[in-house]
Each structure stands twice: as C-alpha cells, then as structure tokens.
Image (tube, rainbow, N blue to C red; front, side, top):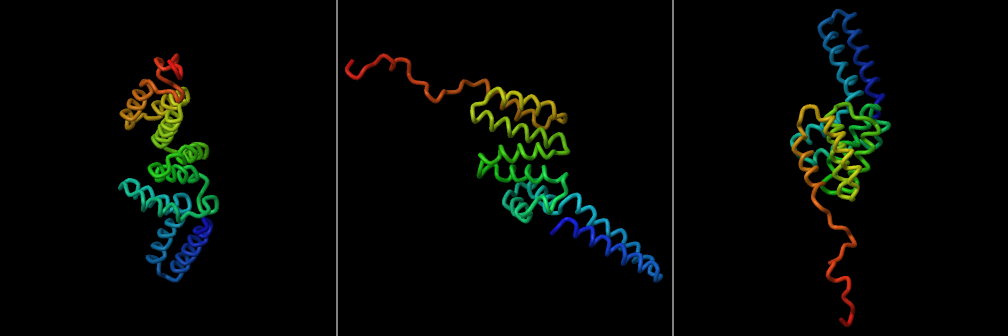
Length: 188
C-alpha cells in the first residue's frame, strides 16, 4: 500500500470523528479521533517492517522474509527513515542462505542510516565478518573497533572478542606451497 494512502485514511477517520462529535455522539467521535493515530503511526513505522522485526525476534527467518517480500517498492511504500531498516532486515534474513548478498545490503543500510546504536554495531560486525572472510584484515579491524564503540550496552562483546581471536589466527595464503617441495624437480 502506498504510504500516502495512510494519511488519507487518517483524515477520513478524523473527519468522521468530528462529524460524530458535532452530532452529539461525542464518545464515538473521540474513539475515532484516537483510532486515527494508527494509520499515522504506520506511516512512519511500516507494518511489514514491524512484523518482520517481531518474527526475527522469534528466530523465524522464513516468516520475516515473507513480510519483507510484501514490500515491493521500498521507496514508494516506506518513509525515508525506514529505508535503512528495510535493507538491514533483508541482510539479516538472507545471511544464512546468501552470505555474499549480506555485505552489500548492510552497506546500504548504513548509508541510509540506522537509528539505534546496537543496530549500527551489528551491521558493522557483519561487515567486519565479510571483510575478514575476503581477507581484508585492516578493514575488518577498523570495523570491529567501530562496532565496539557503538556497542555501549555490551551485547556483542563476545562476538567482537571471537572475531578478534579469529583475526589473530594465521591464515593460509592461496598460493602457499610446501617449502620442502620447492627444489624438487621432475627427475630428482
């Protein structure tokens, strides 16, 4: 549903409430004016994103991605403050199935902006994991430090510590060979 239709619905409900108040049905008029706040709130906080967050909290990724798939054109259906959260939720729901897509979606989410510090910290942590998996240690270190600064509640200290321990482990280079095999010829 287009986001502006919600304002039209709220205006109709308010007009109906005022009409009822003028015709001596003050109680029902007040109820309708209070109920008109629902479409206004849903303009700024999209119902599909709220339901996806709820399903994500219950660890139900399939239903969360189903609610996100209801948003066909995010620029037409969401308020600008929700663009980042749309991409953030897309990244979290696709992280297990398509880890390559996660990095791009998290970068988009950070570009559009996330309101909560712990959400930004989680996005930076996921980006650090992606950078580490691609062998970009310096970028991963920088992103981990940023995530540590953003994690004021200390919810991700274990994950950050685990990532730092993983960075300390030696990595095998793609072209590293056995040094004893270097001087060995075909006929030696």
